[in-house]
Image (cartoon, rainbow, N blue to C red; front, side):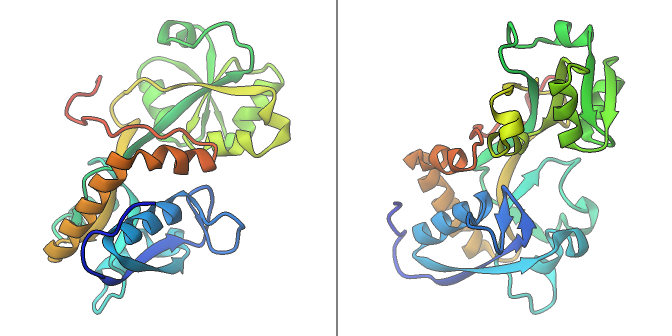
Amino acid sequence: MLAPLGAQAGSINALFDQDNLPYSSRTASLPGLYVDIAQLIAVSMGAELIPHWADTEDTGVLSPLLEEDATIDVVVGVPVEPRTVEDEQRVGNRVAYSKPFASAGYRVVTARGHSALPDLKAMGLSKVGVETGSVAGLRLWDDGFVVDARPTQAAILDGLLKGALEFGVAWGNVEWIIGNDPRYRDRLAVQAVMPDFEGMRWNLAVAVRKDDAAQLKRVNEAVDALLASGVLKQVFARYNMTCLDPVDLEDRTE
């Protein structure tokens, strides 16, 4: 457990999606990755975490933070990458982001027992299962890969089970799906993190209002404490997910 940072800071109001495991859930027995991380940040700040729940597909992730007389102080797990930050032109001058606490990206999935970790040459000789409309599908298509677009991540995994696909490229929560479904758990494996093509890997941070410099300072101190403690790897593992270190977004393979 992290020690509080100085004096009691009262409470911290955080926004979460109400039905978005493995990241957050209002009703599940596991609260979700971002809820757990927010709780650790609150403890480190010496504050009480007060969760606020919303359907973020309707409200957006950052909009409740910026409403007039908003009660939301932070949003945990916001992607920080120019192509993925919500409505960058609209909110970019009103939102500040903490130091990143981890990174997120796509994973390569194969049948368990695949002979070797996939490389780009091997994948280029096969159909690669991707989710329809995903960043991964568009990016791989642009780079000349033969992609097989499927409507859901589960459809990609089913294609691997049936032998219709040799490789799948899916968002990182595929680790959660595989680890919690007996149909996949013993037959499929997450073999690797997808090579860091532009737009397929980004950092995760905490968003605060840009005019709240004191809040940002306290959150950054808490993130530093989290990173120093090594506890994040345990939190990610609770959800069958790999904790990836933050990446230098200025030094990506284009």
